[in-house]
Length: 242
View 1 (spheres, rainbow, N blue to C red):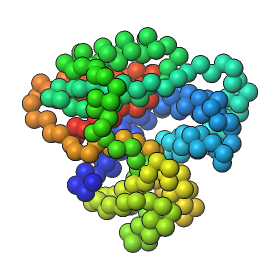
View 2: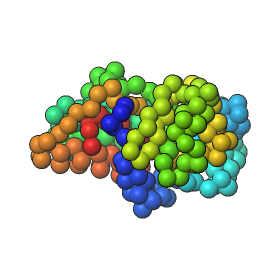
View 3: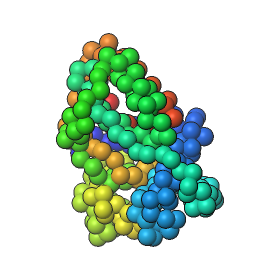
């Protein structure tokens, strides 16, 4: 992972998200509703809900908004009709792309995702066609300037809690966990007063691909922008070396 700091990219995404915070909160609200329907309203007994709450906090969603979302979902279980669906495909120059969506209309979402790929000169593939190029990991990013611990103490706190990797970059620390250990590590850092720029279970590419062709870059950005603008799309993962 060294040399591929995600901090700058995450900061850029946060700034873009701040301009559309209402959409981000709506997306997370849907995830809360589905998690509560599947496992109940207590995050201590609902691993998926605990993950969504961590994501909500890393996106600066207020605690009272999170609590209202959980209570609303708990009292409205019969009306939660969203389901998760994953698409895999290729952007220009064979860039691998995974799209996670949460939708109440699979036909609409499939058409929109397919259109985004097509407009960027890419194509939808079959399930599993690119996911083997990624690893599912818990990823926590800590801004060095906001960290109250030195690197060694932060590393030991993370490793003692169950983290499997720790990387120091120029402006940030990256902590990686298995998906199963993510919540324990996140809670340990929170208990230590560590401010986290990002904390989520994500898909990390095993290798990165550089793009130098201007047309390919524009087409890839077109696909990513269209996917990001789609309300049904929860997350987009790719192996483009930005």
